[in-house]
Amino acid sequence: MAIKLKGHETFGLREGWLSKGLKEISNNPKVFTQNYGADALGVGSNMAKAIRYWLKAGGFTKDKPKEGTVLTPIGELILKKDEYLEETFPLWIFHINLAWSSDKATSWYLFFNEIKLEEFTREELTEQLYNKLVVMTDKISERSLRDDITVLLNMYTKERVEKYDPEEKKISPFIKLGLLKKDGNKYIKTQPLKENLNEYVVMYAMEKYFEYKKTDSISIEELLNGTFSPGKILNLKRVLLNEYIDKLAEQNYLTVNRTAGLDMVYLGKQTEKNIIVKKYESPVEIIKGYYENKA
Image 1 (tube, rainbow, N blue to C red):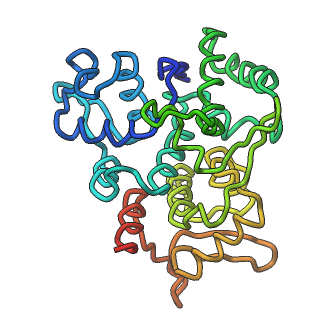
Image 2: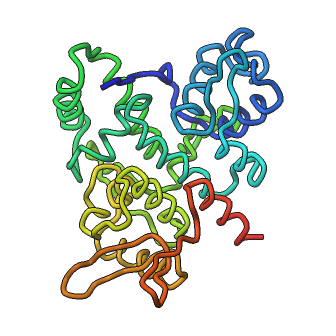
Image 3: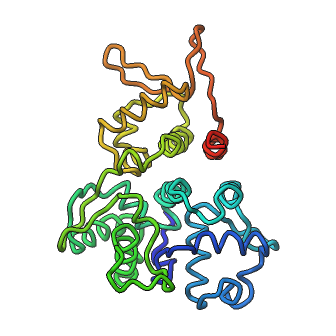
């Protein structure tokens, strides 16, 4: 299995980077061929490399031979509908994609899918990640792993300090998601607040999971605890996941069968003839649906 550590050059995602990167790539797909894109992006060369890496790892861009770096359909939608990423919705989509990116952001994939620690120290997390990685590869740089952990923890927990300089923009926008908090030398995985997690985000995570499993029905248990499941990637407990499932079922996005303890979920509305009719056919369609519903 291919893995990737420290593709970020030790730079976590900062406010404005995703927006800036999307705009520059949209204007010039070969923006990264000249001084790594540093001049166009107005940052140092290592930061420019980091921006390129993050956009690709989060599924907003991809590299195409001879063309350069181009926006994915998701990247195009986000740039068109929320150019400055003022909402948390595109951050959630990016986060989900990142947690799926086992080959480009391996530490993120492992942290949100495979690491079962709910409360931990940096040392405990390092040990568990290392133990997972040795099964995946025989070439592990402990320094790269430490850098990954620093960037990951700061990405979701580092808060503004009193003398915060807004021009530095070092604070990660992903703190807004509420997935992790720091308490002394401990870190705690936290369930996001309902008002901060739109049901379209959960639907997007579900659609990706259904596509991955290549099935028409999945148990609530698996949606809660399976690798790549919404429960894992979004830090959802059973009660809140069930609330979202019921809400999506009311809106005819899902059908839920709880008879005889089955607890099965089907994507789409079940008709009188027991045919499941899907409202959205892909994760991208769900993003479109979110913005159309807002309009």
